[in-house]
Image 1 (spheres, helix red, strand yellow):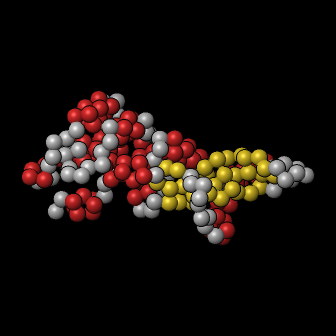
Image 2: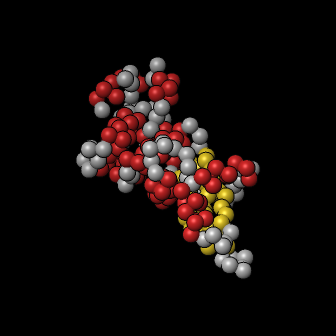
Amino acid sequence: LEASVSKIPEENRVEPSSQVVLQALEQAKYCVEEPELRKMFVSLLTSTVEPDSLAHPSFSTIISQMSPTDARMLEIFKRSPQYMICDLRYTISQTNVFQTLESNIFLSGPNDIPQNIKSVSISSLIHLGLLEIPFDQVIEPQSSYEIFKSSDAYCAALRKYPENEVDFEKKLVRLTRLGKSFISCCLPSPRQYARLHP
């Protein structure tokens, strides 16, 4: 933390919010063994001395409720604020009624994270208010969603329901305004940091 704050010229620092700082220090005690979360707390505390900081008292609680996988998944939203996501469903025999099999299937992100864990992580980030699935979304072209046919969940559904039509409900997932502020404080990119503090 000291090394991080020292990169900010002293004349550019402001008095940090004690509410944000004290809550962050308290919550950080329970996350120090996880490098991804520890790094986020350091970034949050550093941001409190920056002019025009968007640091919010809720950020430390959000970090404390995240897993290291959640932190890694949120990182990819620095590259793009929006990604394709879908629910897997099948048609009940001889009806037009759909039954959802899997929710929030998400294929982007680190390859070493299993697909089912990615889905759980995305659902958690939505619950924390950092991501959202908008109702006014403009869905990508049909062909863009063909990639989901390679997912483990889709292949398993075809084997389990060979007589039923298996399909996707196409959706998008994107950063919320809170999520954008959270990333700016807790996951700043090196280039962004250098631009703020030459």
